[in-house]
Image (tube, rainbow, N blue to C red; front, side):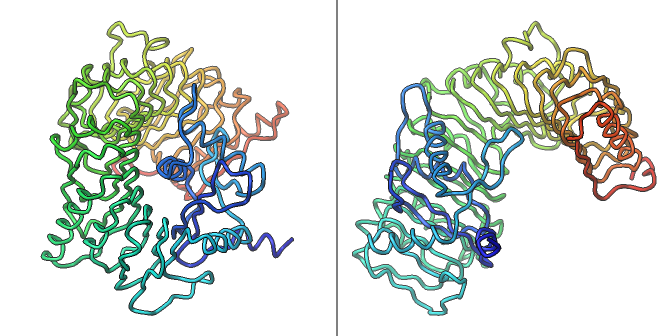
Length: 507
């Protein structure tokens, strides 16, 4: 048993295997890609890759994510994969695989000529050859860490349709990838070019690569800051489903972003750090479900009515509070399917304006995050009316020393996260958060205590504190004691980096 437990938790120094099992197969048959990721396998990534590989399609009354989760649950029930991290409500965030099954999948992949794996062997021993040749054509190509001067044989070009590479030090000419005309999946980390001339050539090659890969369904790029700035260009990839780019050096202008309307299958569009402008079109895009990060000035009725099935949205201002007009926020009323909303750097202030917050405004919203939005605490009264809100994160989001919660608000809230340098007094009663399960306070330097009325919340399971006053910890322990008197021994209090003495104002 001890040996098996060690196998389950073991990770190589620089990688962990990501295996895409055929979710429709009744056999333990490998059908996918191995990539070199150190962390647990993110379910979101897995689902998007499954879709891009064409393992399944949408079913009536079910979207791709729902179909994928049913397939994943089937693999879990058959003990082919293990549940890793879970969210507050039990939703699976990551999965893992047992070493024995990993070995089996590798053997099957080699026998069936499905995978060409370049780089470290199973035990993490680095192959030091300066040149790696692709001996045979395989549909899935995975380049492991510290591989140099990779060369491809011409016979590989016709069959390869997925390329995974997760090492900044890969040193081969991107022009080579242009020969893979049938690539459907590209998932790479790029970077570590020091000289300006190299950067210019690198960017030209990357743009040329994009232009030639007309069959792309999934593009995932992690671009180091030392490469950029990279000005993204689109070439109307009709088959694109997921476009995900991480890296602070990415720039996307409005003319390029407008090409989204000519990608009818696009579901996920994520461009990190730098927000972009997206103009409305005459086309109604019914497949797109995720967009990050839009500028506040894009929040218009004309745009939102053309993406009616949007479920996840990120809005980012200039972080210098130039966008003081909150009018665009009310246009979110046209996104009736929205489930997750993140807003940062947008100077907001809400008013009733005749909006039915409790019924018609964002009726399906479950997760809401504000970051540096300078909201008055009094505006939380309106946020508390959202009928299905389950998670609220306030990260340096509100101004003012006191928060007085209102009766009848936050009826479905299960997790509340607050990080604030100015909150000092918090007044609330238990029925203001009737089903709260997790309370997370971080960096609340001035907050004196948690309201003792939280002891009346029978569903409360965790109070987590970080860099808070000692008096806040004392109040949390008092709530825990009160709960125990009521017969509830399930409340857990965790604290770290507790401030023993009060922190002076301004520090």
